[in-house]
Image 1 (tube, rainbow, N blue to C red):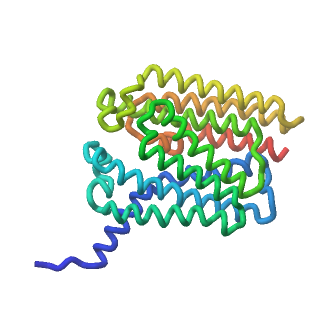
Image 2 (cartoon, rainbow, N blue to C red; image 1 turned 60 degrees about the vertical axis):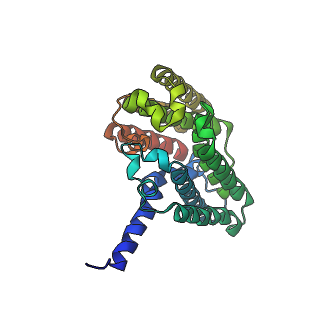
Image 3 (cartoon, helix red, strand yellow; image 1 turned 90 degrees about the horizontal axis):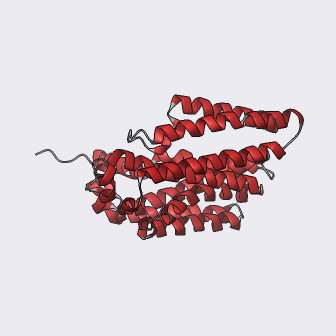
Length: 299
């Protein structure tokens, strides 16, 4: 009988750790850069470096949440057609080790604010961790509240970037950012219902309280509110060419939201993150918006 090769076992373990850490989700931590980009300012000397620290800190914090969540959901994940392959659910990563890694990641994230002398970043990350762990333990079973919690994760990332770079977020920025986060959260649940139908409640009990039609209507109302809020900001922001570019940028933003609404309702089973980043028409609309927005900031 051939003895197991230690290097192979270590490689499998590292692969399980990386898979549990969800690297495909890490790009969402780039939302930390939203405030400096929207404000067209790094806010302070070496602001780019501080922003990068905040991105790394939120990446570590989100990894901690994923490790804990997979331990809590292991039994339910084993009944899911796809999630049963997650390392903790499948046994590839023992629960005790996952929790130990979560502790290390959480402490690393919290230490980032102390390292750069920015206590408000530490407070923001602590709020993110507390809310996320509360979600994993209980809040994910409370309808509507769980949607607000999911959305809050996106907003707290943006606030963390603002804290790290000393770029104060405007009221319009917070409004548009919050509405966009809610659009994503609602469409995540809408997509689950589109794929699994009534069976969705077996894998996520809170789904028994939602109806596809109601989620579709709510997603569209939120998207419309986001477009109107962004348009109102564009109307009152800047002058000359800056004003013109910002007004024109409303169009690709609206196109992207309409496309996102359509994709979320197709029941493809693709994660929302893939819909936002891997769909070509969506990417074209998003890049067009970013280009016009940047032109407005630089004019």
